[in-house]
Image: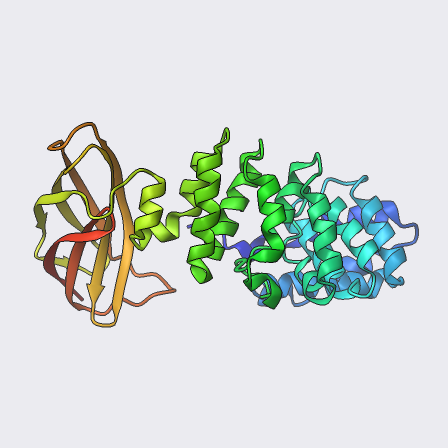
Length: 354
């Protein structure tokens, strides 16, 4: 079993941060910081651990924020931080630097190559709005890919685990950043741009499609991959215009056969096999859905490219009903739907047993 992420904030990560700060600040009570940070740490979940260590840092560093920020910037030059040792430092900046925009953003810029500061910039985007966005537009021009990526990731409308910033829920303020980075040489940056536009598509699909359509038309070295990844939510929903961006005709394609097991036991996988025939040359974007009363969940199945009408493709797949902590699957009737280029083309019933 994989190690829980919360356990990455531990005695080792705390000691690394302690060493970095101690090297940059004469008289820093390193041992007292470590003791305070580790007290009660094991009882906390991930984000609570980050905040706990940040509070211990605030208490033991005991400096006005501008001076503390200078120490943190210097600390990165003494000890190599990583995500887990550096995250509490960015959290400290998020909480205690809110009245010191320039010092705070400069500090996050220095730390983010070690521990990405996308969560820590959110309070500044909320409180300082235009001034914070101006700084982040400057980051989009940086030679450092971590800063360029932070410009996009930190301003995502629906940043996972990030606090919502109301102004970012409308796409206009972040478009200059996305335009600058859409064909960035770094895949790390481009994936953030694509995720950002995918966020926009959830609330403003027409705006996202307009952006992606223009990018597709204008081209670029990496544009096709960015557009495809950014449109994935729209493709999952079978949006005709999104399908058109990748050359797929909405509703084109026929399921000639679909075979699925009659039953599956909770914890097992249900196998299914299908044959799809192309109605015309071009991509076939294949999805499948598992439906029951009150639930209809869509999954990626495959993508095939037909060279001519009549080309056929046979696929064998399976779907897992392994229990997970985030979702309960009650036993009962289910329907498997096969979706070809956005249109349901075949269904088959089965039963999930306890």
